[in-house]
Length: 319
Image 1: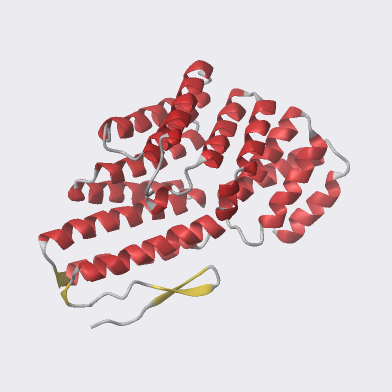
Image 2: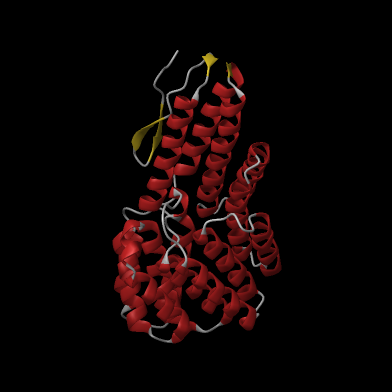
């Protein structure tokens, strides 16, 4: 029996994938599950993670319940494991972007288990990429490098060039945390080379990985290395990419990153302008991780620029 179920997220009702409560699951059900995951990815790109992590967890619970109470063949079983792993990967990212690191690890560990059952090395690499990014935020540079290199080794000769670019950018970030400037630069160069080879169909979850994304990752690397002027220029390059208009959360993050890089470089007026541009996006974007960086920028600029009082008042009003 199919019954339509909904959960509340982003101030509206989101439909859970319509699945039978008993009987047999088929490939049409897999299509519905994939459609639900694609909707979560799209909402994250457009609005960010807040509220969505809980919704995504409900999606997974809903699919797992159907899997336990229904029968299915070996082809559907592999697809179920694969799609559940993909949903866990996305839910882990949403949790990470919300600052819930323990929840993120839980979902990524679960996703790796499903990826192993599905024998899907690319899905494993997707999850390891996320784990490497988290390690960078936690200041664990060597761990980030090790995780990203494991993903590269596991998918050698069978990964999309965009995935190669993403993983090499993760290696670069890890080196930047460890202040290894030369190795960081080499990895960024390799990421750019791999992205230049990207053509044809791109998996939906990888669509964000384009020139703007790599420029943003380079900005993070230069920030970690203390080269704030170069970091700011990389952020400007990221914002100049036409692709970034499709990814509002990334646009918000890049404006915040540019603001803090300009503040660190002593370009206070331009940094304040970028901070205001970030505030322009705040009503429609929910990324607690980058909102926290914006708050730190507010505190930093208030102490150095009298004109920042207007920004501070606007920030308090909007948050």
